[in-house]
Amino acid sequence: MDAIIALGGIGSAFGLSASAGLNAYIPLLIFALAAKFPLDNPLIELSSPYDILTNWWVIGLLVVLLVIEMLVDKVPAVDSINDVIQTVVRPVAGAFLFAANAQVITDASPLLAVIPGILLAGSVHTTKAAVRPAVTASTLGTGNWAVSILEDVVAVITSLLALIVPIIMMFFMIVVMFFIGRFLWRRRKRKRVAY
Image 1 (cartoon, rainbow, N blue to C red):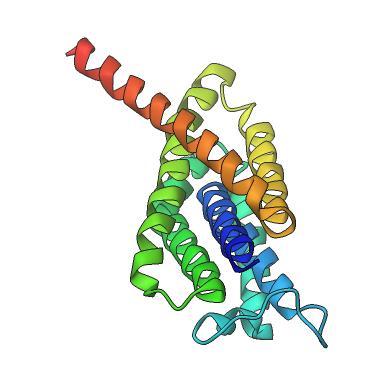
Image 2 (cartoon, rainbow, N blue to C red):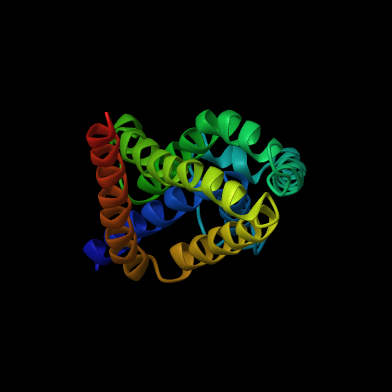
């Protein structure tokens, strides 16, 4: 039974970290709310220092940052500036979420959990940042808002599934990471051939 719980925690960590690569604040907010509610018996028990997410001020700040992110990400050109800023924020959020989930299930060093979180959120963010200029160019900026809404919806669904069915989410994320790695490898290969 402990192995299933551990596998579920790892699956949750994978799903939430990947979701952070699309939008850092959606999985952080969903995770914070899951750790806060229901008030008498929260869905997730967080230990220190991760329990900072359950503070009402932090939850409020996440809501404000989420609204700003969702508005800014819908505007052509401004979304590219936002992606540059989020190059740091999203991997850090992914690392925090992965470490917080690893801490829930084990006493492993948080540093060991930070690395996969950074890599996972960073690779999803890199893929998103690589695809977005092509969307802007091919649709003259008119498709940005639709793609951004789709990314937000995927981030919400991924975050919820990571908490509800974490083991299935882990296997799904492994498949997604395979295809992201393949996309990035092919892109790099094409650039080398072009030179």
